[in-house]
Amino acid sequence: QVTLRESGPALVQPTQTLTLTCTFSGFSLKTSGMCVSWIRQPPGKALEWLALIDWDEDKFYSTSLKSRLTISMDTSKNQVVLTVTNMDPVDTATYFCARMTTNGPAAFDIWGQGTVISVSS
Amino acid sequence: SYDLTQPPSVSVSPGQTARITCSGDTLPEHYAHWYQQRPGQAPILVIYKDTERPSGIPERFSGSSSGTTVTLTISGVQAEDEADYYCQSTDINDSHYVVFGGGTKLTVL
Image 1 (tube, rainbow over the protein chains, first blue to last red):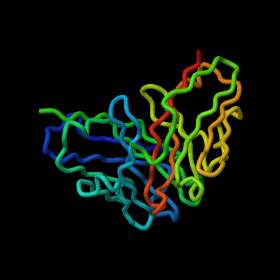
Image 2: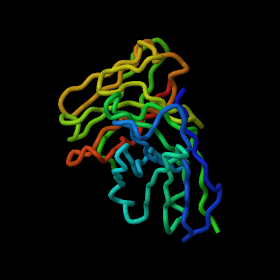
Image 3: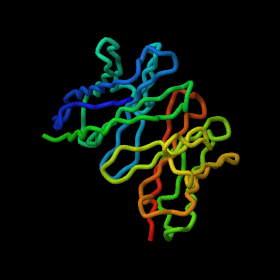
Image 4: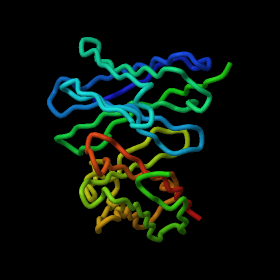
């Protein structure tokens, strides 16, 4: 069974760096075609794609947020980590990680339940 | 603004057919996928590669594509189908970049 679970601090102060961890099971990120992405959703708003890392450790970022994002993976721990620098109240959102298999559906077929991040002083 | 355009809302009565459109210049070149999101829950993939239905998704969910528009059709809508629906594709210039539509709220009257 494939599962993903996000973790991170519930509250972050403005200007701080947010570190989010996606812990997954049921698949290997070293398998050709496997990818994990981060997606966020501000309260009452639409989904917004942030970043993606693939089985070859290639990394792709939202153009609008690229300067603030870093995605990495630790295959020994089955984790994908996203850091977001210089957090602002507008970054308050639910942050999801999701799996994509490029040689399968090529869509986000499994999602974590999300973690709510609030940015406030 | 979004690279993929969806109507903000669609309303139908139970048993009727709901059609949710998604338009974008990238769609003739790249597949579209559809997600259902109920309040307080994570999205669920309901259609991938324009027309394919994942296992476990009811047959009343179907997808179609024509030019720059893709359509999610829900036949015989049930109360449990009330949710937000998002289309997703990849950037017209680089398929490594993911784009989402603005979402459509489906209300079952």
